Length: 257
Image (tube, rainbow, N blue to C red; front, top):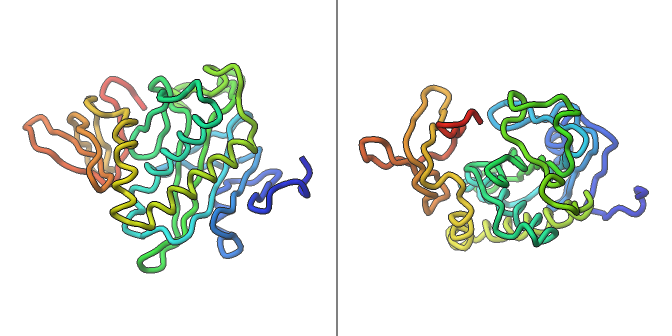
């Protein structure tokens, strides 16, 4: 597809170190709903400073969203993950109900990581401009790329479970559509979060699982007890105490994710 045929909202780059970095650098020139995409991302970034590997077959994109309530930024990656699920299921109805969310930012299929979200914001008081970065495995040959569980954890690609995979442009358009819907709901603040909570809880891959939350300075173990009304992770400790967490790196206690 030639550049002249691309939708006005799409910034298609031949290559770049990171679509999130490019979007943040050029944020003043991006409109609400603009999408940055590249087929060759060389220095991808994940949550908590980890590397996001982007071999051939990974959709790497970043979407600019305006007027996101600053108070809701800690939960945005979770809501964005739900939008990605809707986009995939819209294009691949055979996967309806099979995709889950691993709080706070991963999309899972069969308990394996299909996509990751990285949200970064430019804050101005009560609202923020946000770049939502998405890495989605469409048709990745992990062995050929030289990646194993030490690099990518328990990853999976769409082509491994679906005979048909959508085009990059189809996925970009659908992801953009559902992220714009999500942004509109979040502008309603409490009412918007309430509208999203039932779907979040239905997709909660951690519920009832023995997990450890790595907070950087300490690790806390217990059983995941769902998602709070504010989008926080609830953890039931061994002594019965219930705690909520706004961020942290999650490990299943019987896996090394």
